Image (cartoon, rainbow, N blue to C red; front, top):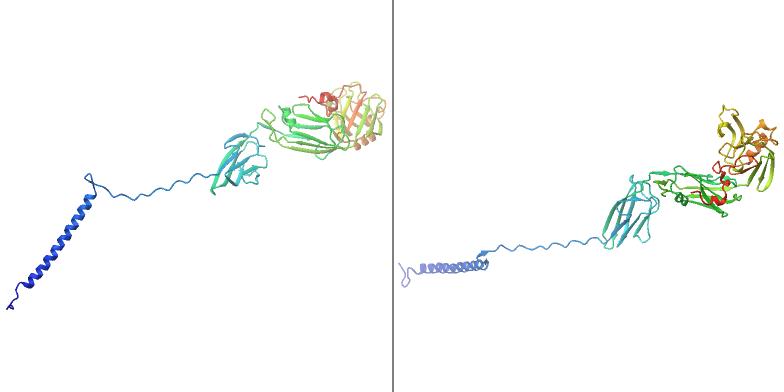
Length: 416
């Protein structure tokens, strides 16, 4: 039974009303969402097309500028025909050098030195002939960035090398007639270039000049005999020097020698006597026998070149066969050579009877055994034997050390 005044539909009506209210509000929300979505779609349209989302933009970093330090080598990369005497230089601009190395193909380093400002490096020793060297260098620039450099160069490759020998040898004491002789083992085309590599210094100072006897043999001497006690130095700086025709100097050489006492012997073919003066004082007079008429001794200034306690001599030295009439071979004692053509001062016991009165030798100066021994014991390389009144020809300048046979005016021309 329904209470009086209450509708049966009251509570139900309220529930329905509540649901209707909820439905109504949901519809409103739905409409608003749809309108928002439509607005968004319309806002995203462009000429009727939808645009893709704009991607994020990432800007690339700017590249670093090149390092400021610049390494330069001299010679330049791949340079050829560089003199082995050239100073190899590495420099850097706008920075400081670090490690610098110059090495041969075998990896052998070349000595060098960094200059105090650390921007320049230079070699301090010569290079080799015909080699390719590699230069490696590092530096740190003013921007504190490191740079590296590698380059190569090649030195001159000579056709052949000329080695210079010196006479007198280093440390010798020689006589006042001793010239300085330079012997090259290859013929020299540019003689002046070769001369320019040789320095002769003396104490006290002495005027002298060069003279060429051949393309391989060069001499230097003063105008007059040396003064006793003179100290002489010969420096040859020929390494790396061009002598023409592909010939280069092989090796630097030096010789220091001293001029000893003035030992000067005079052999007189007419008087048959030899006198010996030492430092201007007569110390001995000896009877001699010189070359006979058909084999006369050469006249002129001879210079002692060697001494032999025993020497085998034969006639072939002056062109006479051993089996020809007058030909001979003999072993002699106390033989002192004074020319290359076979002239010696030596012991001749077989001619003692003729010594002092006649000339019977084949061109040598014969002495008695005692006198020959005295001469041998007292004479030295470079001492002087002057032959006079021999009836023979003048000694040739090229025969032994016949240098003093060349007049000074002719000598200073150089014979080039």
